[in-house]
Structures are given as structure tokens and as C-alpha cells.
Image (cartoon, rainbow, N blue to C red; front, top):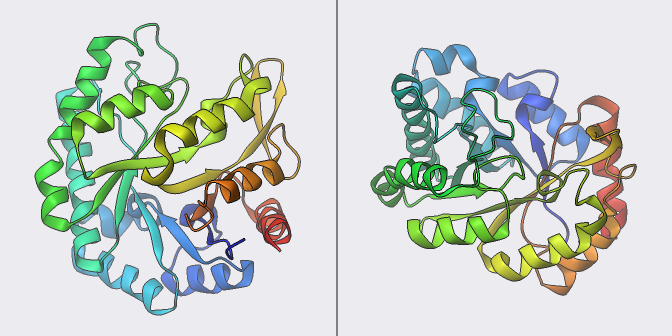
Length: 277
């Protein structure tokens, strides 16, 4: 197996200054980060201080800490035009940072018709919601082309783009700069968790070489609610997941360990290193 490229979300680390992020990442044995500038450096972000943001990013890069993704979380189907315009401005800022710092990808999930609550809505899987997402993301095509940057779309079972097939349809319509983040846990719920192997295999069959990033997280169920746990402890067997990635020659794709902080994050990174030996 290739040496895995393992990262974490910057905002899951304790201290957000560039020097502290570098120290924490090296101490955890991370190979890179996923960065949401509006979460990690809110003052510079709110001031739209692109010089400061660029300088911070370059500090990480010069310390051998590449950014696997600039996370630009937004809901492209939001019904409030002002909110949508604000969020698109944030995505475009991230694309400009990607251009200046030679980062290959920005990305987001696709949200819900529930606006600020990214939760299940009876019409999320309908044609109108799909069209709204497509229309909004298509606005980013010129920016992505100019920056030579890709937009990674992540499917989530409760969201508008909710499975492998809906993501295939969307990206085929949007074109070459729209690729894929795969988060298996986000495709699963109490109804389909028993089928996680088949769901993963189908997703890999449909998207394979278009996947640019993996999100790894795990959960148990309390009733129908998903509760986050360390990678070694949940209902997804990540030893099996890695074997499936080996079989499809996808172990070069970076992995972000999500929704963990402190010791659980440390233990999960160590667990992945152990599995890859």
C-alpha cells in the first residue's frame, strides 16, 4: 500500500495560528490539512484581508503542510438571495486563494431546501432542488477555469446531492472542474448502514478516478441518531475500506479524518497508520 496521506480539518485542532497549526499537525503525524479560512482565521476572513490569508496559507505550505482542500461550506439551494450571494462571495474568495497559493481544490456539500438547517426535506431529492444546485454551481465555472482549480462536491444522504447517482448526474452536467469528495459515513443512516460495503463499492465504481479526497469518520447508532466515535470503534470497518481502496488503486488520494479532536483524533490517525503498514 502507498503511504497514506492523512490530514485533519484545521478547525478541529486546538490553536489556529499558523505556527500552532504546523506544530500540532507535525505532532499528530499529519501530512496535510483541510482548511476553512472563515473558521480558522475569522478576523482576517471578515476583513477580506487576502494578503494575510495568503501569507498564513503559505506559512503552512512552506512548513511541508499542503492543503488538500479549501472547504467552502455553503448551501447552493438557499432561498435567501442575500445569503446565497454572501456565500458565493466566500467561495470565490477561496478560489482566489487557491489560485494564489496553487491549491488544487475547493469544495462543499450541497445543502438542503431547509436553508440554514442542512437536514432532510421531502423535496430535497426532487428535480427543482437539483436544478437550483446546478444553476448555482454553474456560476463558479469561469472562476474555477481561471484559477485552474477544481470544485469537489460531497454527497450527503440528507442533502440534495445524496448518493452516487445524483452526484454523477450533477458533475456530468457541470463539466471538467467538478470532481468528488467521498465521505462514506455521510452516505449512511439507520436505514442503510448494514449495506455500507455495497454502497461504497457502487460509489467507487461510479466515481473512481474522479475522487480527489476522502473524508473518514465513524459512528454508532443511538436509536436512529448517529453518534461520532473514533475510526476504530464504529459501524464502518476501515480496515475493509482501505482494502477496497487498494483494490481500486486509490490509496494515493488524501484522507481527512473528521469530527474528532484531541486524543480521539490522535488515536484515529495512529490507527490508520497501523492499518497501512
